Length: 95
Image (tube, rainbow, N blue to C red):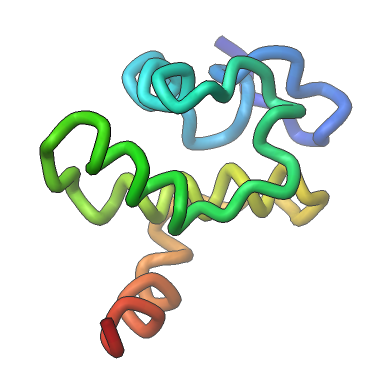
């Protein structure tokens, strides 16, 4: 699947940069069915909800992907998920 370069071009979850079939399935489990559903979502809360629903502590890199996707849908340029690892570690350090 070709990845969207703009929010307008993201017509399905898998078109969002960094989102493949497995992460799209995770998002659908959370009630996120379209790219527009990600607008205004808090990636940290999405990650916590997924861990709670599945009873599994998912790899924290999944949180990085959620951050990348929500930022993209908020109009930021598409960036690889690993660009958000430092931010995630800093945010979670105090928890």
